[in-house]
Length: 300
Ligand SMILES: Nc1ncnc2c1ncn2[C@@H]1O[C@H](COP(=O)(O)OP(=O)(O)OP(=O)(O)O)[C@@H](O)[C@H]1O
Ligand SMILES: [Mg+2]
Image (cartoon, rainbow, N blue to C red; front, top):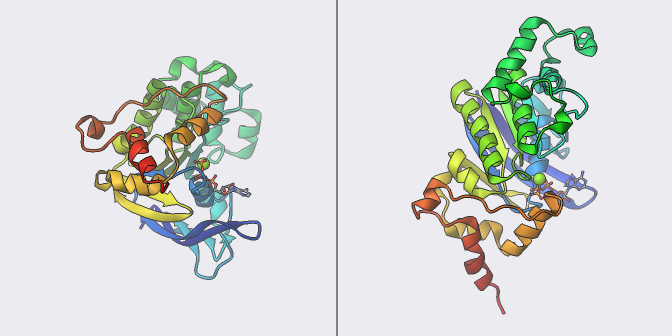
């Protein structure tokens, strides 16, 4: 049984903004898959379809199943979707934690699907739940910050907290939408390592959308590349060559990438990302190296 099975998923906003176009793929339990593609290619929309935040277009035959349970059928969210969400941990680029609550309380919120509602509402989690949450914080190296207000943590610490919450939730599937987009290289690496470790040790299926392609090279064996709402590559990360990347990112020059990244980091110039082992070994050019050949293809 697949962890994720998407059959003919499409998404149109408004009348004609066809953002995802007839997408099908399967992901086996325990895979760690990088979702890459230029800005606007539909990565976040796909993640929202997978966690049931958006319904796909009402088309006969379209279906999304997670671990054998159909969560969307013919573009309608099914009754199985809500209980399924308990098994899905979602991590966004930011705003994952409630700032005024302690980190520990935020992490305990991951247990809300598991404890009786009144206990959760009162914040009266049993000791066993609190131990579980503290163990999760320990795994991501954040146990010392358990009682600190989430708003006072750095971006990378908050993301590790969000991962701890998914761990406490005992999520079978983690969907992370650009979890490292606004982090410095070392915090980004910490967060990616935490995701990778959970994937390897617990067998949790992870889908992570990434703009920093070198992180996808380093941490994801499989990659799904989206362009203009279609899958243009789905396979071994090692099988992607410079030409594939040039085709994927097309005319989106490094200048566009940088200004986009700056928007996401509230104006701060993004730090350069470090090369992956493949890049260091010269097998794959760094993403920014592609800008020159791509730009030289522009017809004058
Ligand atoms: N709720 C919405 N209403 C209307 N249009 C939307 C909505 N959500 C997304 N879109 C549009 O869908 C397209 C794909 O957006 P999406 O956020 O999925 O792209 P992305 O690949 O995640 O991009 P980025 O790398 O910039 O995060 C964009 O053109 C966006 O404007
Ligand atoms: Mg996005």
